[in-house]
View 1 (cartoon, rainbow, N blue to C red):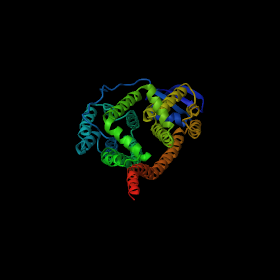
View 2: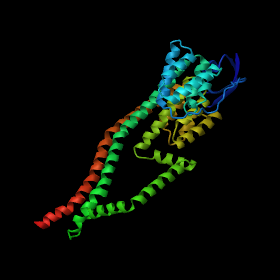
View 3: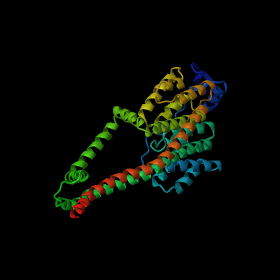
View 4: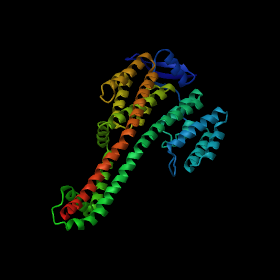
Length: 405
């Protein structure tokens, strides 16, 4: 039996601290939950630190997120079939087509063979296995339900990857249309238009305004194309460097949230991802304070991240997580109210699940709408641009025909 120091919430405001004897952290959390408390922080008084190197593993190439999801599901299936961990890692490594993943799995297998836990061995590759992944695996080891933990994390990752895939597919056609249209316009301005200028110069009459505009743009592109490229590259480089600063990240985050249509989509996608992650961590028995700290990195928007950090500090000082979110315009009242109710009832994970389900439905609907509207919109825009160029080139020819008659 181990002794755990705990800090729990009772209702919305009450904070209780004390000590508890239990077999594991998971058992301590379950006992506190049965007493109607929401665990905020639980720490074992005496911990044995495993002598395992935590230095980052060196990989020569990239391991895709999808490959880690497949690895997690395969490992869970092998565990359920009764295959021990070392043979299971060997089997997956031998079947892997990615050389980098194969090397990483053999390194993890060797670390486990030397006495390290699976979570500690995976921790050698922080760029491949994030803190969220490691926390779920560590909890599964403590509770003796590692296969279930692997299935949870693989299901979670699969849902996130599916949402990203749907968004990319929705944007693929409009982006292709934009590139093809841009290439067509540049070709017409730099190749076709110069060959028509000789004809226009012999007209002897003042050219129509659209034609004069088109000729001016064509001449500028052909004369200053090098400087245009240099300026665009410089603007892009300065923008990237500025985006790496704290002020730049905040400014870019605010700009994204204020974008028409896309702003609401980005906000709901961030909140659904955060809520789903936090729900999964709490369901796996991780104290709420630690769960929030692990969930923060899944949020990409710096403004939302900062607000969650502030709310986490208020929670640590005895405040209400839901009430602290209510003070920000970026967190809807629907979300903060559900979280407050979940805190008061001791069912925070269920409340977060409701929030995640609601915003995931909204983001799915937004992706469908964007996919159905962006394609005809891009066709219309490119059609207008190309149509303007064609009309501008044909107007002088029409005038020549009129004068000839």
